[in-house]
Every structure is written in structure tokens, then in C-alpha cells.
Amino acid sequence: MTFAARLMVERGSIRDKSQDWGEYTFVSLPSPGDRIAADYDGAMHYLTVICVHHRPVHIHSDADQGGHTSPSAEVVAKWTSSD
Image (cartoon, rainbow, N blue to C red):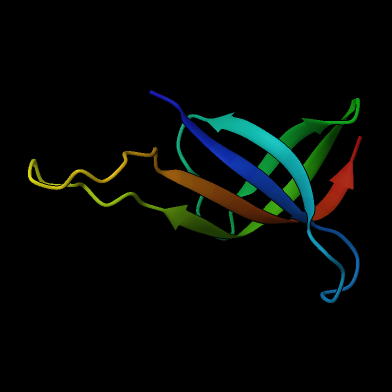
């Protein structure tokens, strides 16, 4: 089983906008403090996970006619170096 998550990367100042690097597949969602290596723009980049934003989906009862969507996650990480 694998988990897909959007990778949001912090580079530069804390006031700078996060860079959206797109969807990545993980063998498990990382935890804060984990180091990850991600291929992006033709190079291998090394990042430290700051947090993971989980977006769960409410499970509707049979009586509820609400739409069903998939759960998702965003991994927010600080860029540290690249090859």
C-alpha cells in the first residue's frame, strides 16, 4: 500500500510562499523531523518534514446522500540541499 500526498516546500524566508511541487507517492506518510529525498526539476532534493496536513473525509451513513470524496494529505517540508 502506498500513500499519495502533495509536497509543499519551504525555501528561503518564513514569509515566502510555499512551493507546490505536486503529488508524490510515499510508502508511508512521513512524520515531522523525517528527512526525505524528492526528485524535482531534474535534481534530487533533500528536505526535512515540518508537518503533515491530513484531510480526512467524513464517512456518510446510508441515509446521508452526501457526495463521497477521497481523503488527502499535504507534506510541508523545509528544503535543505540538492545534488
